[in-house]
Length: 417
Image (cartoon, rainbow, N blue to C red; front, side, top):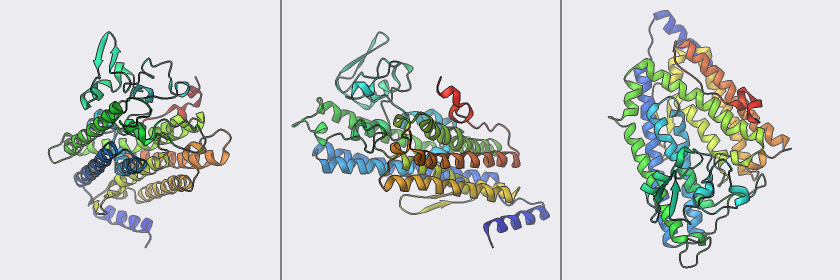
């Protein structure tokens, strides 16, 4: 029997008996368990990154730098899958900017090509904290003579400017890869390992660059420990989604719809197509954007289907949003599952194209009709699945679900103003 037929048969049975076998409370407990597992995996892989960073700073070489880059790439896999818990959960939204804020004016952190790294709207876009032990902000001085996690927290979004990203995955990414100067040609950042070699220093201030990398990695671990606690047995995130079933479902569907539509389809994908701008890549220094998009999509599927495959291969699964919707409208549930699976195929096509040698920034290049079509196929799939997420919200009778939009999808003219 096909999935669609099975779901339809189940719905007919429940309609005949008047019973609903899937309780919202069970769905939300499994939702919280998947969140906890995802953040635990993110923490574990961040600790692996810490080991690789320690090896790099102890013995700077192209081999240890490459190993640190690989550890960073592996750490992104579980973290990106947790983004489906954003937008609807207040504790996640309050916390998330510390670990995954982007895009960033990387010249705040370290040396850049001033022709490509400046920003007229940001007075700190070329501040280069690694080269400068003090930063004047609104008449006050930030003492960065020793770069510590506490100093990075002070610098993060300094002066209220969101592009002043000093912490999290993307700050570490920039430190490991350096600025990507290739535009929409193939190639990522190419920072030399000697930028971390205090005995044979390139790029100047290698001792402070090492301080920054170590402090940023330590702070990432600390922030992820907070996330794990947030979804533990006594965590506020778990309490928020399980205390009231209706509110918990609102949070879950808000996260799915907003990540799918405004954030991923809009800000992370179509905006870059409209502007043909590699700066709109999510992982722009490492050319890892194809993976970030793929695992964001997988995170949506994890949450909807109630199933997450952990880094060690074990599985967390249980009653799902799909089960909850299927009892009320089996055909809609089957269509939404099919939509999400179709989206994963489209995101997978981008991923395989990049892995075959055509990087995401090349796909964004002006005049690359095939690249634009590949990205837009995934954008269209994400938009289509969002429409069925909205239908599912109506079928289960929820009010208060607001799906975030994007000018790139809703008002293209505003993008160019």
